[in-house]
Structure formats: C-alpha cells, structure tokens
Length: 183
Image (tube, rainbow, N blue to C red; front, top):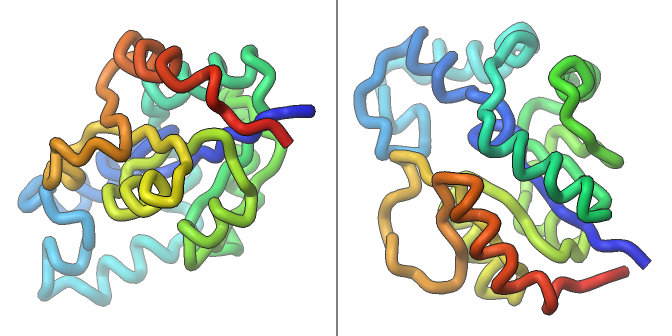
C-alpha cells in the first residue's frame, strides 16, 4: 500500500512567474490567465509559453521543493502533473533531476488537470491555481494551495489549505494525515 501526492510544477516547484514577469512585466499579477494580464501580447505570450527553452533554467520555489522532499520521506509516491507542453517532458524531467526533486511519475501536457488528478486518486494535491485546488477539495481530495498573488480571491474558502511556509504546510498536513487515502 502507498499514498500518492500529486504535485504541480509551475507555481509550486518552478518559478515560472519570475521568468514570465522578467519578460513581460510585473503588472496584474493577481490575474492567473497570462493573456488577460497583457491582452495585446497574446502572440508573444503564446510563443514564450510554448518555447521549451522557457522551462530549462527556471529557479526553484524552495517551499514547494521542501514539501515534496518531506512527502517523499513520508513514503508518498510523488506524481508530477503539469500543463506545460507535452514536448517539454524531457526538459521537465531533467530539470527535476538537476534540482534533486524526487518523483516517481511525470505527466506533462495535461489539459484537464482536475480530471488528471482525479484519475490518480491522490491522497493530496499541491497546486497554485485556485479553481483547481477548490474543485479538488470539493471532490474530497486534500488540496494545498501555494500562496501567490493570482490565487487570493475566495481566501476564506475552507475546502483547501493555502500555504506560504513549511510550518504552515506541516500544521495543516498533520490535521489531515490520518485521513489520507492509500492505494
């Protein structure tokens, strides 16, 4: 028997936001949809998001990495799930290995992340997108939401756990650890 932890990459482990902001600017960070942040730059944003080189040298997000390492030590199978373009699978896997981020399974190019997470039947999910975390929480999956400017709305929604420090994660993890599903 084992438990699955499903983990997003960008916004949880990799600092895509920093790379994006350095190229396009730091305005409207409360908006998750990049093209809505900069409506006149849709073509440039599409090129940036689809360029495999965009993902090669992203900085790590230390909190997310610490959480994954902790979950790995706790015996979870780590399933990385990303909506990056599918052809970035190799780059993503290499980036994870270079940054010594443990994982057992990697799925890149996921279009419907809620559906992908549901198919995995994870004990918990760590995400940065509010509607994904809240959808999963509504379906009974323990969802931890990394605290970012683009996910501040509905801050009091009690179906997910917003986290901004490892201590906060650990406290909330301990609250649910005895109810986590094993497969």
